[in-house]
Image (cartoon, rainbow, N blue to C red):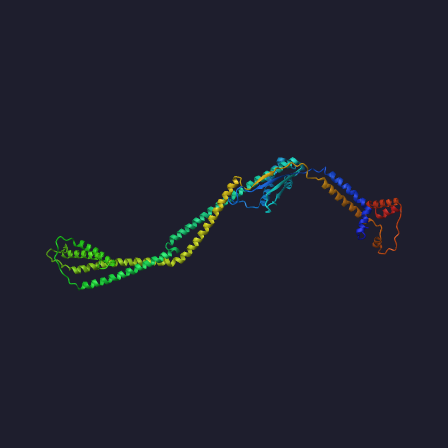
Length: 511
């Protein structure tokens, strides 16, 4: 009936009522077989340990940790390192794990990795999602082996955490030290460039501009004063030369015991230069000027009375040349003094002019120098800021490294040691029993479905319609003895499980 028409709920209940025993028998037999199979499966014991994560003992405000990686990531990384061949193979050899399973080395390593389990424990009290600890599990066929291997793996985790943190701190410190050395060299180079630039452009810096302007104004004032002095001296020279042309020559007798004429002339030149210098500062009526004039007058008087020095080539009998008058000598002496002073003032003007050009050039070059100086100063300031930042980070890294070396940073503390499992976690008889029931039910439903598919009996009006596509006029209730009913059932079962063709089975039934 199952394979010939669509069934409804009433049909399913009818099938269940008619064939319930086919479902019940497998649901009883299969659980018994499953529970019996548990006695032949090697048991598995799981040992567990609890590791608490303790934060560093020094607050972060004083010493900031250099290990910034997420704790979940670090635990996953540590697990990968512990499950490596170099770490896991010594444990397998030490406890002779999976020796009875005739596995290769790689197979034993894969089994060990599968039996290691890490479960993080997230904080639910603070609500911050922190990681206060984690559990480590290891599964083995022997409870003592499971406990020992679990303790060994936990020890590897605590050691690996300390090594990783110390390595990270030392690596950070070394890296920052190298960067700090390079930054210091760069800063020294920038300072050297800045110092060389200042030496090369001395007096043209932006801060020197105001002083240069002040000095330039002073130099211009001095230059104006010197030019005025030159004009005054030139006028005085012109007046003396005019007066000298109008003075007649005069003679005088020599004075006995006077100094040599060369000495007197030299002294006269010095007095005249002193007088000219005083005339620049003071008026002619000043006492110092009058005193110098008296000395000059006395010296000229002596020179006028002294006889001229005899020449070696002049015979004694030759008459001496006439001696100039005191006024003429005074005029000539004034001219020599003015000439010396003019020469001095002209040199001063040349020097002042050169200095003015120098300061004008400095002032004109100040904007360009300022732009170059700003760029160099900006580079030097950037290098200084970078160096100071690296210096602060390097100091923090050294403090964090010292903290890790003293074992005062973040650490793993064993809260619960690896336990000795009392009962195996596998196989569980309850699970196997439920699985047996499910398998028995599935098997029984398969048998019922097969029987119903091969059953061609017409039991309802819907069956008749499905086979004949004709309406039912009347239904006659079939009656028979129980023996015939049971025989009919046995025949159907034989036809179901027999390998004979349907025609032969039908013939056997008729015979």
